Length: 271
Image 1 (spheres, rainbow, N blue to C red):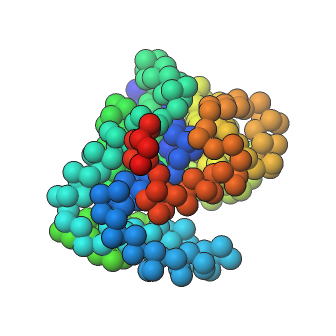
Image 2: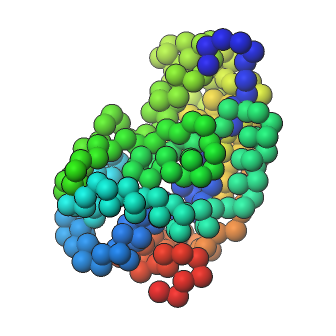
């Protein structure tokens, strides 16, 4: 947006914000339900995952190794599965409360943006289903058959990268302010870098750059004490939609089952 009357924005994270899951793990679960033998991806991924905890590899590199569960899958089949996954595994699990908020922003005429670290293998189909006009996600190069280690085009769409990717749609004044060596770790942005009358939503401290970019913000089921502290000081809203787990241990168990293909493909499934 570079001309005309400035519009307000509504910026949404996806995983654990609009839905109480990591959608990439859900997608892995979906694929393993279709092709159980693909669990062998763990032999390639698990050793690398151990290097992520101490920070020896980046989250982007870890994501590329995790996507090995798609090895040798034809592009046409991957596209079909991605669309079906969104309809069967994602949309039915989205938080009704957050979907209502998203629709309210759409009806108010705001520029609604889905900005997620999820891969663009399926993320654009979620945006299409929600009728969201702008989608930013981690870009994965799709080939005729998926390689063992897929190629990431650009950076993992996380932290400050989310803001860099959005500059093309932001007002010129805000975009210019963001280019002036902004320190995203500082809790306060200059007024020129804030989208007035705009809103943002996320569960994660990793999205603080996104939340600080808007005049109003809301944190969804926050867990980090420092995250909660900043949100409280700034008067951000706290949203607590019901989750499919009750504790951090429950969250880890849920994610582990998805990595092993042991989670229901659809809500209500017993398999």
